[in-house]
Image (cartoon, rainbow, N blue to C red; front, side):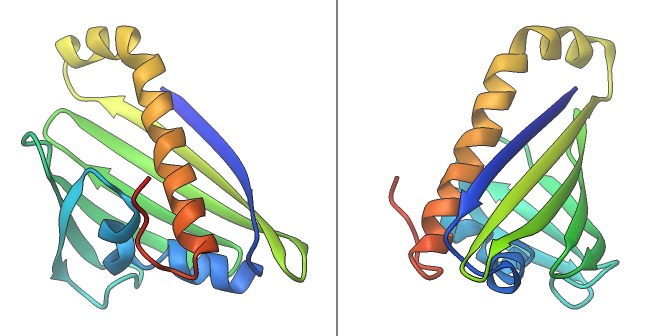
Length: 149
């Protein structure tokens, strides 16, 4: 299942890309993430790994940075117990002070039950993706300060 969200953000492309590609900032804009735990490598560098620990539930993701071609694009692979998510973020300059973030997430469910449930959860998954990207936009436009919603 694929979900794509595009948002125009009042930041130069370089700054937008740097904020989005820095995994140590995830807890400042993802309201459902309790903490970021580095596993290996330089945070944000290709090949580095980290865990995203949720505030509720037990869906821990191990993220691997696939590539960071900043300020153009970054790619991640998230591995959870029941699902994997391939994430591609593209950063497009619209003007010297405005950029577009294009976030594409491809979900692959690991078992039959997950695949069946994903059919019914498509709307909720897309809604959560949009909510995360809008939270990132608020965070970025506030100069990288945590948001409250």
